Image (cartoon, rainbow, N blue to C red; front, top):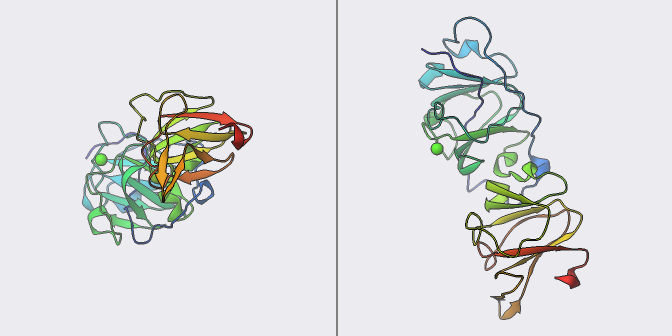
Length: 251
Ligand SMILES: [Ca+2]
């Protein structure tokens, strides 16, 4: 077996049936990066090697194979080539939920591993099983925290996400945008507004366009300052520009 670099990961699965209708940044527990190096000596041979407070991930079943050991608060939004789609078993020897994601940036299916979980991802008691599919992970205070990534949005920023709940690719801005680039145009499905102004979002470039919603026409979708929002239909995946205003009458 091979020693592993100090990465972190955990398994979490998409629990559509149990996913809360609304999750906030408060549900997540994200602390400063604190990736731990492996201790000196040979790599851990089995479960016994996972120290208290650590999340340990392995490339083979039963805690075998290459291992990565993570500190209690070390999210990893994008795995290296060495680890991408390689995690097969895990020992979550931490008091937090370990959130394993199918895609980078907390995207795709989610496999949430309870505190104390020790086993194979394929055999875990969760709805999503991401054996050899995990591409990012974090630890969270609750299972609900695995289904939000809003906590990534820094104070002062407007953050646009390509997946619900602040998950997936995140684009951060602090000003207006008259025309989104291809990376996010018609792709934004959740928004965190951590600026001190309200965000007016539009279907067209240069703050134009409109939606028909239940027989009424709306020209802008507003995310108030301080709010996080999962964008409903027909507004989801249709934004092309936005501006920040002090009063919504300025939208
Ligand atoms: Ca993957």
